[in-house]
Length: 455
Image (cartoon, rainbow, N blue to C red; front, top):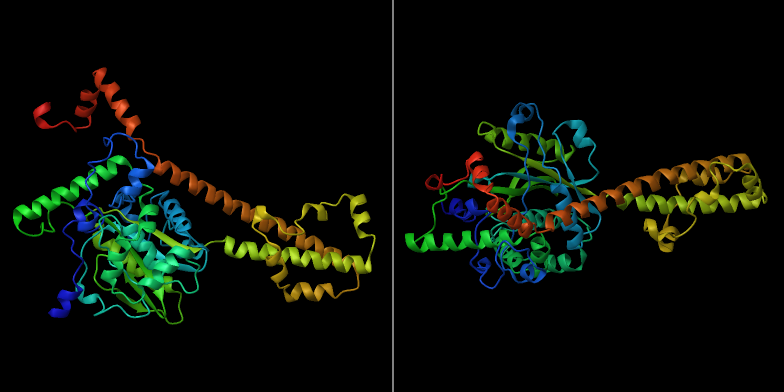
């Protein structure tokens, strides 16, 4: 019984107010701020000790039948916020993708490797006996000790378990600092990790801060009046992010509201997603009768991590081809110019190029694959020219894929900027104009939002 008590949830008394429990250190009432309807300023976000909610717009389970068939609705745009957060944390080589369905072909189309899954659902306590007695040494796991911090907690619980990842200076220092701490102490350390909180709270709006602080203050008042914790059944459970991560030869469920991680199964020789898929489907089906809402995201390798080395290798191979052509056909460049060939070498990148992130060191360290090296051994100019044409066509495809991924990142940054914009002042002005024109009350009545005594 003692072990069960130790593995029970992290205090869920405040889940109704956001995505997790409150920390006394996070309560900072907005007394020194401007009114909540004004736009949040940079110093407001910087000085605020709370954590904003990184919300989404989950697709309604009008599609429950699709879930029963293995499908999954998704919140568009949430993956953009998470990808931007990872980049601003300093993590390199990973991004976040939407998972539209649980179909095998869709999962197969994700960028590989898939480092982890993030599942958003309306949180309910799982059986504490499923948790490990303590956190294994090989698993980096942090509890959520601050309300609304579960998005950052889920991301950290994934990236800190990816072998050989470049976490960036700040996260790497934090991982080393926290490696010997318990999950609870790691959670409290994240609460005091100003760098992570600033990235997270860059999405905070003034009204968000006001509402969260008021909710925490009201909760603290209720606890004082009742002489204890507010019951977990007060209010509706909030949406919550958890992580599913392959670590070693097992898949783990890392839920910051649980005291210890859950070992979900052994991977063996199969793809870990084959093990994770039925587990996620079972979690969705468990709540499908209540018409719950779900979101699934995947933390995957950034395509640029492989595309840029491929481009560097291509440039190095083209350089070798040019050298070989100079040896056996010195006048090949003039011949090419006269024929105005579609695969003119001038159309190809032939050296370092900052626009594509290609450096001289990358080209110098690139290894020419065996097939190209074999073809370079030919003494026939037409074969070398054919190889050159293949490499130029290949380079065009690689450059196109890089441009496409860079465009995706630009769109993600644009979505994040839109989410960070505080529309509070504009909305406040619009509501005042509706009130002055006598249009506000009819709208509220039509939407059934007017209190009974004011109708």
